[in-house]
Length: 330
Image (cartoon, rainbow, N blue to C red; front, side, top):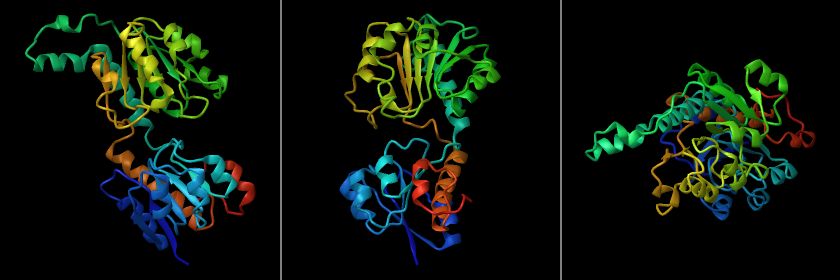
């Protein structure tokens, strides 16, 4: 019997990695560009599996797709998928947790260095006809400053290693990571409040959940030092953008470097665009040619495993396993 996969939405120019996997198992493949629940329901009405980028896979969607067996997210975060509804309806949700650790940690370092050395600001001033090092004043030495990590998973741990090369002290907040991991990595384990109070750079590395939404709010910015730069390569909703704007506008902190925003693409009227101490990139921290190929291949392999009656390697909603009788992952 034919197994059908539909891509709910995408920004990619090629699907060769997915097709290389699907063709091995005679899986049919269709593409759609959905933005709403109803568009997903229509495009995926007879799908066995969905490859999902940003389109909403809500309870309404899941309950209207009787053939649906799996949703594979292009990425690490699964905030586009209603996990509770998926588990209740015996739908496997999977992601790819290990495809862009180098890229995101590199990007966080790049944004931090650019903010610290005023690279973008000085480049722009030169193009405006101003050649004056005073345009960059003040710049402080990076060595012996503290990098605070909000979250201490695999990407943050790689970032910690790279930051130490620059002579930075590293601390982190993550209540889910064992103390032994902090000790092995040589990173201080602090409360979020302590991290905000003592960090010169604060880099966000937690998923967007109900618990982490607006985690960095007015109260956290009030604790930060005036020279603090906050970096976000995770998810936009973790930082309250109204609070961030207020903190930047009122010199509570020195700057921000953002690869992600609560709403993407950014609204041209967004108040943060008015500030010259904010550095933006367009949700690209995950990207390299190698990481994109790996993401697409592993997402397809998650789907292929389900087709073969196996649990996907990167299963997110473990609560679904008692309801299904599948073999271990490929």
